[in-house]
Length: 270
Length: 261
Image (tube, rainbow over the protein chains, first blue to last red):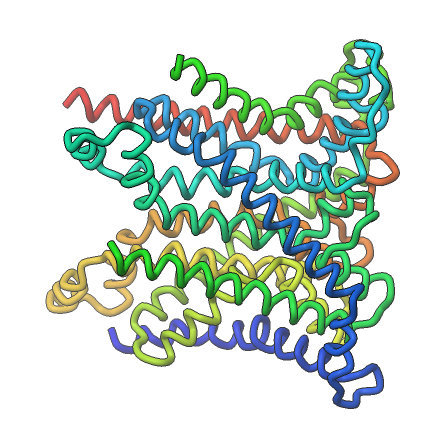
């Protein structure tokens, strides 16, 4: 059976060619200028007010949408986890099913709902109210993020909640805790791993998206994802674009480390 | 009171999640071209969908890439997972960590790095490059769903099979594969859905002429997408729902049979 190890070899080669080398190339482009000389200018350029602002805006928007997803999603996960089994499975599928429709199509559909001649404005005009500018602003981008990533928050929290033994809650109640206290002292701490997974699953795609900000934000505001695609596709500056991508990667890794630390310390304390 | 609140809240969230889906379905039956006005019920977009070459080509590329990426990444992923399972020490942990990279990296970074690779070697981007990119980001998910099943497997079964004279190949096909089959199936499903839904990585790894549905929608969204796309998305969501209903009914029957016993 020992020789079976060999089976890992082809993928090892594949990983070197298509995962490791491309990222190395990205680094190589990031530390060189267009003439091929080594420089740190691409990185130092990034640390100017305009680009720092873009980085901050992306982190801020992703952060806000993560918080909204958590606040909206936690109760849903909890309500579903307490349903009888058959109903529970149906609702779970209902929550996940929209994600099986093409992500671009769902986002485009929001353009039809929020747009100048969209459904909401038509409804408002029926009521005799003035139309509102709902599309092409930060609010629309936020809505798009929450809409697209909400199921990613609900599902991991649900799968942790469903494993919490009801006897813990009964014990808490027997010992005199009311529903609120039992939730804060028992359910919430036990569901932290699910919350952490949910936060990473929402924050990561939100901080790097360029589709949502492009379609719903109308390109009025630039975020990290837009900056990267702009550098590569419009400006053709692969060197600066690579540097920005590299910084994006670092941001994600830092967030991963922080959240991992949180979930580890929690395991130790339990 | 509390029960009523809970119910209302859940349904409100569901309405939020389904609003865009329903809006698309309703507009797909709209006689008018623009979504500004309702021109009466009509099936004309369903008819013209099957004459719209641009959309049909995009659909073709989406499905063919998803099918190929799914099959190839499932086979390679399963074989590699078995290989990784028998590895140990540093090599194993390095392989697992590198395998994680496409999972934790933002899509845009994976897409860009692919574009850099193809650009660096002057490879013309198109169907093959897009397929390679899809396979690359699908394999890790297959491995991550097969590996836990391998770890759960009883190691003594392998020894028993070998003691009874099975060759390594027989042990793999008769013991290991059946044991990890659920992991392979869920990995394959995940690969298929990830591939069919992908936009960002396809966008950066494809070339002129090869467009999948996501790329088509993205490039057409700003000038207004033709209503055929509403019809197509309605058909797609309908297919998924029917498949789901069939699978659910099937599993319900099975559990009923079990209950009878």
